[in-house]
Length: 152
Image 1 (cartoon, one colour):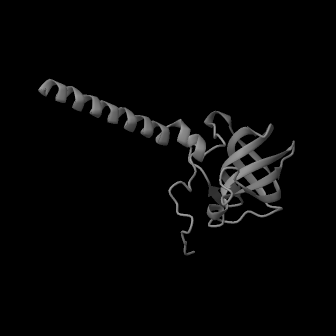
Image 2 (cartoon, rainbow, N blue to C red):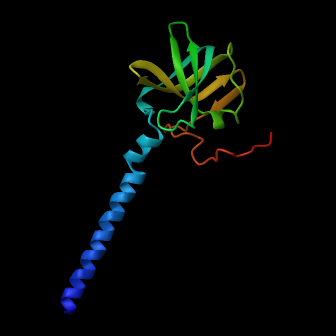
Image 3 (cartoon, helix red, strand yellow):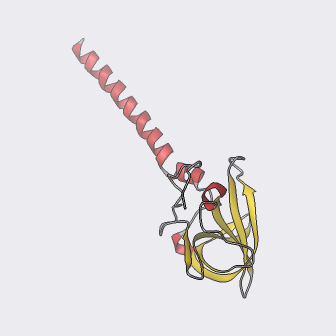
């Protein structure tokens, strides 16, 4: 009887461990990253472009209609490229970028909806540098609260 109880306890503990491990991998592994950061920032495709902001748009997220993203279009000497910045609630707390500004954007070149685009990590305008992502591409807004009030 004691052996049966020990085997049963061991089986229950092993099952709990497997369920917990599977849940942790699903929540913290690549699956979660892809859900949260569906546009993959690739440190191997980082480049810097210079140009003029010709348009700023606010686009709803396909996964969360309440989450609006800020994008801009930058015209360089050779082409015009969409640039993905981040969520409206975060961008509104930063130094503003306006249509007509001459900027330098460093970020990861990706293909989005079959077209080239850039996920911005930093934006420079004159002496101002706006940092949106760290060197690994993780957003600076990670961990921020959407209703956070910042006194300037």
